[in-house]
Picture 1 (cartoon, rainbow, N blue to C red):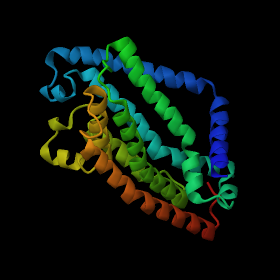
Picture 2 (cartoon, rainbow, N blue to C red):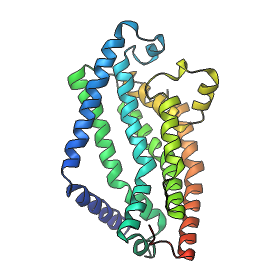
Picture 3 (cartoon, rainbow, N blue to C red):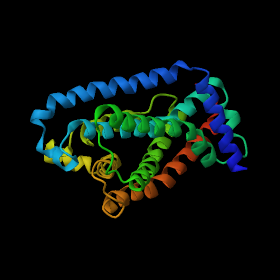
Picture 4 (tube, helix red, strand yellow):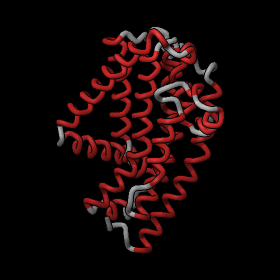
Amino acid sequence: MKLRKCLAFFVRDFLWDLSYPLNFAWRFASIMFTLITFYFLGRLLASGASPHLAAYGGEYFPFVMVGLALASFQGVALTSISYTISYGMYTGTLEAMLVTPTSLSTIIFSSVLYQFTTALLEIGIYILFSAAFFGMVLGRADLPAAGLLLLLTLLAHLPLGILSAGFLLLFKRGDPITALLGHLSGLVAGVYFPIQVLPGWLQSVAQLLPFTHALEGLRQAVLNGKGVTDLSFQIAVLGLFALALTPLSLAVFAWTVRQAKRLGTLSQF
């Protein structure tokens, strides 16, 4: 039964996306513009590349491509559930969905299946096009380690998206969690540059973010061929974030749903 419900959510979101076919073209164009922009930026920096890039193969373009690809994945984890909640409030379907016998956890995780599928496809496009047209070398990539890190990245960041959705459900306004984490990750987690160039205190802040460890692990798996054993620290950190935050976020979200039901605001937008 749960599998059928998950499939129904997936089909619903796919049909919704399919009703706006230009979205696919714009997403692809956005990826291509990003690839071209950072490819030429990488060429500009080639002669004076930072020694901090040596740990990632010495070139800026592969370094930043992995960062941008994973950043798009993180963005989906932080915003997809809030998007589902806001869409349900806007269309008036949220209340009907939340009063059904379907568990909250099933609704939450089913609501993001399609978004994460498309996010994985975007990561694939980033990496494969970088290799096919811009000279990025993938021969050393450890795919099992990369796959495990992507799964743990999802599990470590999805609870933060659930907390964001709870804030939106309760206050009907954009939450501060998504914006803060998005900007903080872009600044200190190493999307655009190695965190070693930051002041010491900012490097300490970076270590508190799961995205920092996800980026480091994925770069080492894709660019240097490091395996699961070599990346045990990053895997353990992401696993701890997931184990600690998932039950907390589900409990908080369940409480916000109860509050919204008590106040009669589930259908308000």
